[in-house]
Amino acid sequence: MENLDDLQNELVAAVNAAATLDDLEEIRISTLGRKGRITALMKGMSALAPEERREAGQSLNVVKTVVTDALESRRDALANAELDATLARDRVDITLPARPENEGRLHPISQTIDEIIAIFGEMGFVLAEGPDIEDDFHNFTALNIPPEHPARQMHDTFYLPEQPDGSRKLLRTHTSSVQVRTMQNSTPPLRIIVPGRAFRCDSDMTHTPMFHQVEGLIVDKTVHMGHLKGCLIEFCRAYFETSDVPVRFRPSFFPFTEPSAEVDIGCSRTDGTLKIGGGDDWLEILGCGMVHPKVLDACGIDSSEYQGFAFGMGIERIAMLKYGMPDLRTFFDADMRWLRHYGFAPLEVATLLRGLTP
Image (cartoon, rainbow, N blue to C red; front, side):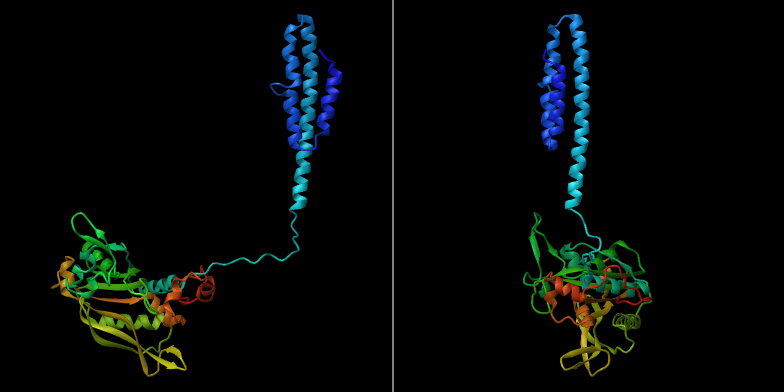
């Protein structure tokens, strides 16, 4: 057996000379690993006499302990040195000004929906939602839209592939389908506000294939056209945040309401600038009317006992009017510059008490 004192001094010297943790690991393996030098000497003790084996074992254990302690000590020293080097390399000058943070902005559509819900929520309306994919009954038939109506044609509506039974699902063309589902599944009186997406085959400066719409519905025994007018006049004043908003109701036609009307608000156009309120011009913003008795009957509500009114408007349109956005298509361009200009602080919640616009 080789001289253990010389072996101990050699191994300790090698440990202390290790420059990196990887070098130190190689020394550990070559010394204490399964094929290491000390391990090999311990395996060779089986050929010694019992007295020599006892003495050699004690001496080898001393060498092993010394080398193990030296490895641990050197490992701690190298780890600390590596940490110091990392801290020095990644040192942060705390006197430097902070990096600017990019603050997210709330999209004008989301802000407008919040404002609408806040206004009608104060009037007692509750939020209702429904699926984007609808069937013919909920999107057309229950709303008294006849089979020959142009809205049912493929050039106006996005139809899905035909199903085994021959029927076809479609992307809803309005949120009125949610009104139908609510009337089917609830008992009057009803008072709901329904914001959501709608889909139509249309695309230009003022139309997109996907757009947002909000509709309202009240069903009760004594509701009448005067309630509808008062509700929408108050909405226009609250939304545009001015008490001087002339409102007029023009007779119109919708299959699902009778009588029907379109609502115009007073405005002025001066030097290419549109101003809501006052003026000698008018701007159409929504459609409305008393719910047609056939719609009530189709939804399981007795039209001889109940009546109601409904209204609907495009969310992008009224957002454009209020916030001066000239082109509808920019709503969906995902342009961060546009969103930073027209967006809203995300934590500012629209309420009538504090003011709709942050």
